[in-house]
Image (cartoon, rainbow, N blue to C red; front, top):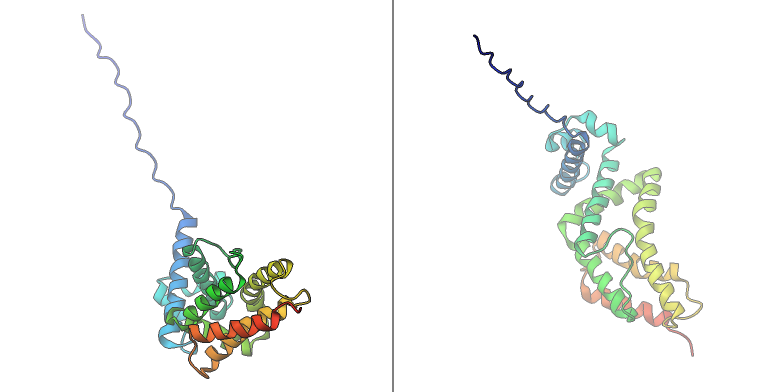
Length: 219
């Protein structure tokens, strides 16, 4: 009499290897490209920054960049927007966050103007911002794009805070909030761009004093 051995169950198959996450890989590449563009324009200047140089620094192919952006200026603009978004996030906000409204208009505006001074004086922002400004001077199409995604959203923050102040009676009822927003921001940009004099907190405070004096409600 023979005894049959029980049939052995087949060994479990090893799980199939997961396919690479293309979206994660793309995000890593995009982040590397942003970092490379910002670093190169800070180190070498805009004129010497090239798509080829950005690609080499980021460890990607040149065609990867051209698949996502038409030019080095477009790369730099997106990299700068990402940098600004990181700064907003670090402060607990986002691109849609407005100027804080504590009920004290002068204090709220002083906080933002001083932060702007600090940003413009920071080499991390100075080089890229000058590069974007330079490209905007020679390319109307790029200037329009930069105005749409960078300048207008920034001015809108001031306008919203000033509109609230106008409703509360803190500034004149007939105050033009768009002009007021430009009066608060343009002098900082002018002094920074042309280096006419040092850009300091004291200058931002003095500018704010003069603008608010002009906006004060009339008796």
